[in-house]
Length: 480
Image (tube, rainbow, N blue to C red; front, side, top):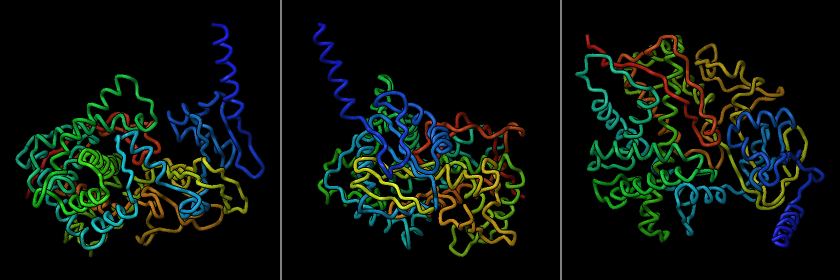
């Protein structure tokens, strides 16, 4: 027994000696934390924003931390972001994406060609095809709104704004992108959304590999049920399929993906297309309702429109600024790359740092530029006109260190991996808010209510979600 213990101790010592790492010349400051191997993983996962703010105060705009055996270099200088965003030789986005695909969706696509997938997405989410998507989305928006918020309703109805926004926009998005014209059964939609919410609620733990045993069962049950519910979308043909879905399924078949993995890929796309729009619309509406001046300005602009807000000739600078401000406060994705080979990172201030092969690099625009007080005055405060000049034109000039910024807010990412569906997402939120503000009376149940706090575990995974909800009440607006 004692020899077994001694061998184990020696093996552990050997492991830590071989894995020992110190800061080399020209490398960023290294902070390994106190716990061997684990390092800062727990604090990083619990509240990444708080942790990285602490590291920034300690080390500056670039540093390397250890988390669960991996070394992650974090860059927080927006003037230097292009050094990471546009380097496709030394840095790679797809390796880490594959890890998450398997952890979260149990999806393996060995012959996957990201460039071909992006071409399909670009074809259907931009240009003339975007007009068709917007038209379909607008039609489904009115149908779902009438079903969920009937026009013959006379009394006030109460709901949580997050629940209302997420559920309604999820159903609209599903019908538009996955449902075709024949798969719009309301009970099926409700079932898909309920299972999706269970799955989404555990997504960050799946990504980090920190699920408890009972959570693993819940996640697998929701995943399995969603695969079953999404299978008809994979099999649908003709009017039962949307053009985007038809093209995506054809791509998967060309890559030799079997039926089981095709269905799993649809779950990935369901989350990718629906995981952020509902939460973003919640934050936008929530900020408007808790800031009467902002609500009045947006409603006035919306009610004055002579054409659909989705018409290409329609300009809505007040709405656009109000939305950009909501996203600045609540969009918090990581931009992550794997270091394929040693790279010298040239900072905007002239400093140079060596990035090691095998490490990861992470940008966190939420801290800077979005919440940087040097760039945005009173960054914690919602200011609906922050992105407007005094003459009402769009404000694009923001500065840090006396230099104009290329990136002053980055809710959609940037570069080759920026969000292809950005315009469609904006159109969806604009149509949703237009329908609510022009067809319904919508107000806070408690006029003094404040916005709920954020679920800190969601930092790094796109749009933040609230802890709790914001109670509202609504009823159809009486026509004069």
